[in-house]
Image 1 (cartoon, helix red, strand yellow):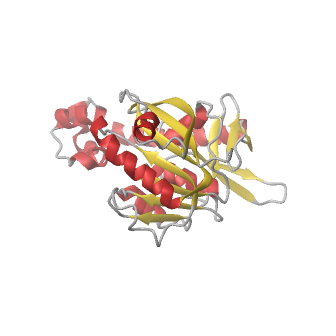
Image 2 (cartoon, rainbow, N blue to C red):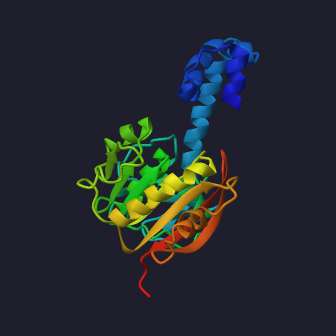
Image 3 (spheres, rainbow, N blue to C red):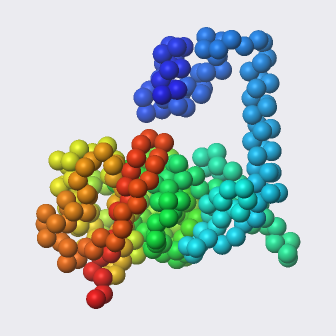
Length: 293
């Protein structure tokens, strides 16, 4: 909303998909049309924000301490408010402007952690909201399909470590760029209906994470078949699935997909977690596949 307001106010030329980056690129030249600034005030403001960010990172490092989270492979920064973080698989790399925390071990080695923002990742938000289990840990294999979030992919990459693997079906530019530096992320560009086309690339996985964003209910049937087929092709017995959907869609995704096609013998819903994101309210539905009785 702020970007759109700035575009209208300053008459910047923007491509919709790149609006934020275009606005930030053009804003310094036309900032005077938006707010009143004296000469060099913008430079001083940018310098102040940079110093503030550095001091904020130092404050987290000095006042907080990193401890193990209840989920294996995750960590918490204990301080005034607990913060979720992962051990950075690519030290020195902050992909989305997140804070990096450096902790020095007794032997002199240093470990770097990345903050996991729950407002920008549906899985991170579900963990923050108290989901009972995410079924993902170091060494896990995860199939991430649908409207892929690059932030979540990078956090999963940190979580599973070099022994694990994240298969990503449904690419965005930020995922493609990020995956180049992460050996445990395999990106696959394929249509959602062609679940069989990457059979030679994807092995059996422990968890399928499926994103449903901005789709009307009439498309659930097609996406439901795609989810079911991917599970039957790639999800191991006693594995788990997670479905992220917008709350404004009234029907339960699991009920709509699985009951309509009599798949309840294979898919067992476990819990639904309601989460709040910057773009709206979502639900994360968690279940098991071919669970042992």
